[in-house]
Image (cartoon, rainbow, N blue to C red; front, side, top):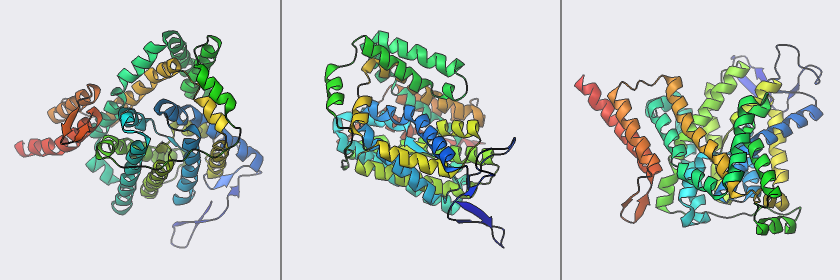
Length: 430
């Protein structure tokens, strides 16, 4: 999209991207803006690089949760295209699978895939509603309803709630898991540039290869890969709705809001553009993409830090590259053999990867507290966060009638309700 200033000083858009310079070079200190592009061969190369950057996470989520890989990839590409359209080409972003969905999907596995998809659809609809509110009232309303102490606690308990799952997978194939874990840590810490951001993907690949050479991959999965067709339609499924599963999934909305708003702010800082007016549209787009994915059989979506890394490394913020990435993902989705290949990843590899991955989600909550300088000498902040974390980590499970809710739901509901009440009581006391 090309941006132009009209007589009122506002930015308008028209179709197409402006060629940056000669389309071949980026001058020192310059960047390729969202409304610009390099030559198409270079743009296609960068777009494919974005797809590679998101592979580690987008494909890991369906692998862990048992969702169809190609279906998730299909809706990832469609969701990215939808995001670019709704944000009018002003916010470069790729929508991949959100790690936040792993916890509720794993916890609700016994309810069946259709009920899990219903939870994803519910999250998407609520996220759209949040986007509409933000669009009408401004992005500051998010900080008022979900201050950092609340957001950080919910994000942390979502990740740490899964710790037993990670250790269980690790214990199933300890040698394979150890190789995966060690490689992941080393690449993340000492890997140069973009390689360091792909530590989990590299660890999974190395652990996968090690497992193949040591016979740790299930023979039936190898047979299924050999028998899979090179080309075919993704496996589509519809949702059903169970209240217990929906309530278990809804706390993910908090994570998606935090990720989405953070992405818009990061892009604005990198490109030197004010994108506050796009916060509502970005949330609506992500919500619609998640709803569409859940309605068709894919995992929920979110914006990706990995792609921010690609933009920072290349200095190319062109939304044309993301359009290419969306098309590439959709094309790959029509290869059942590709999906079957991903499902040969053994449990030990997942154990090594998720030992880091789930911890990273938990630490992200702590990072939210740190960056916002949350005051834990304040008894309100201290007590509500403490109770929410223990409910989530200990997987507090209680039933209301026939509806059984786990630690993620109780921890999230508890802090969302308790924080404003206790804050009000503390203010009245003063």
